[in-house]
Length: 256
Image (cartoon, rainbow, N blue to C red; front, side):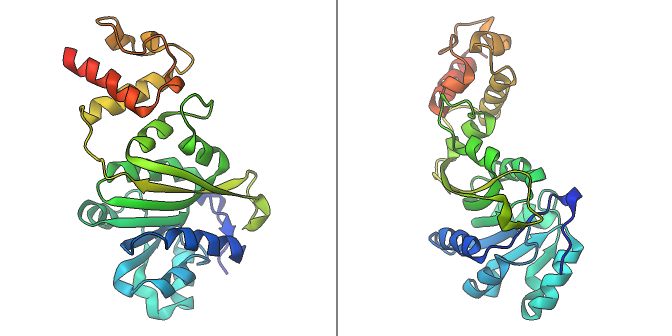
C-alpha cells in the first residue's frame, strides 16, 4: 500500500461513497480527454479507467510509489499512469495547449491554488474541473462578492468559470485524516475566454486591489487612481464582482 507523504500534502480518500459522488459529478460532462491529478491509491482512478477508453484518460502523480502501485494494480492501464509534476510537466503543458480537457482530482492541498492558476493559464482548453480542496479554499473560490472569503481566486475564476460548491467532506474520510475539512467543487467553463480589456492588465488590477483588501480602491490602486478617477474607487475590492473589475480595467486602459 502507498504511504502518505506529508511533504507532498497527501491525504488519501478512503470513503467509496464520496468517491462515487465525485465520479458522478464528473461524468455529467461531455467525455473529453480527462486528467486525474494526484491519483494516490487509485480510489478515483479505478472508477475512471472503467468509464473512459485508454486514449481518453491519464492519471498523473508526482509520487513514484503511487504510480508504481497503480501500475501493479492495473497493469493493463500502466501506460496511462504518469510520474510527472502537473505544474511543471512539458507533456501536460503541451496537452493543455492543444486539446480540450476535463480535470478531476483529490488535489494536494499544498499546491491547490497553483493548480487553479494553471487552469486559468489554459482556460481556453480546460472545460470542466471537479476537485477536492481544503474547505477554506473551496469556499473562497465559490464566494460571491461582498463575502469575507471573496478574493483574487474568486474574481479570476468566476470571470471565466461558473463555480459550484457541491458538498463538504469531513476529516475522517481520509488516511491520514487532515486537520481541516475538505470540500468538492465544480468549475464549468463559460466559453467566454476573451475579455473586452487587456487580460494581463485585468489580472494585475485584481491582484493589486486585493493586496491591500482593507483599503478602498482609491488607495489600493493608487498607481492608477492618482492620475484619474476610477469607477468604484470608494469601495473595497471584496465589494466588486468581476464585471466591475472589468469596468475599472477598461477605464485604466483608456488612459494608459
